Image 1 (cartoon, rainbow, N blue to C red):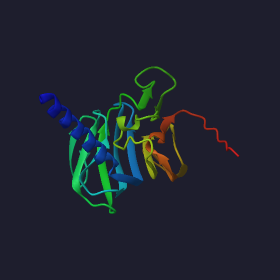
Image 2 (cartoon, rainbow, N blue to C red; image 1 turned 90 degrees about the horizontal axis):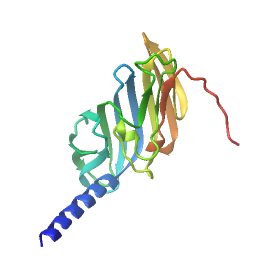
Image 3 (cartoon, rainbow, N blue to C red; image 1 turned 60 degrees about the vertical axis):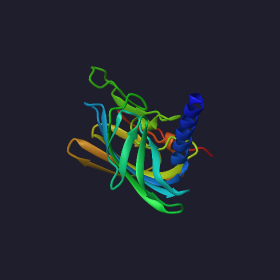
Length: 207
C-alpha cells in the first residue's frame, strides 16, 4: 500500500513538472549579458515573451544551480533543483513577459580558457548543444522550442565578440565593448552561441 502511494506521489510530481514546462511557447527573447573574465562570471537579464497554451498558476524554467536568479520582475519565484518555478495567473491564449535578472558562475555550457594563466590565447565560448545553455542563463531546455532573439554582449574591448544572427550594433565605453546581434528566424535555445577572443572571422554562404 505504501509503495503505491509513493509511486502515485512521484508520478504526480513528474506530470506536474511536465505540464508546467509545456504550458507555454516562447515567442521572442531579449538578452543582455556582461561576461567578467576575472571572476569567470556572467551578469545578465533575460526577458522572455511567451504565449500560454493552457491556463496555469505556475510555469517552470530551466536554470542550473550555478545560475542565481536575482529577480523575476513582478513574479514570485522559487528554486526547485535545476528548475525555477514562476508563480502567477497565467491564462490560456494570453501573452506575458518573464524577466530574469541573474548571475552565474558556469561550470559547463560556457567555457573560459586561458584566463588567469600566461597563455596567449584567451577566449570564452559556449556549447549549448543538448541542454547546456541553461547552465549559464535561465531558459527552456526543450529542443523543439523555437523563437527569435536579440542579444547584447558586453566584454573587454580588445577582444572580438561573436554570436548567432546579424550584427546590428556595437559601442565602446572605456575598457568595455557591447555588441548586439539579432536572430530574426525562430531557432532552438540550445543553438544560441556566444564567443569572444582574439579571433579572425571568416564568412561564407551556402547556396
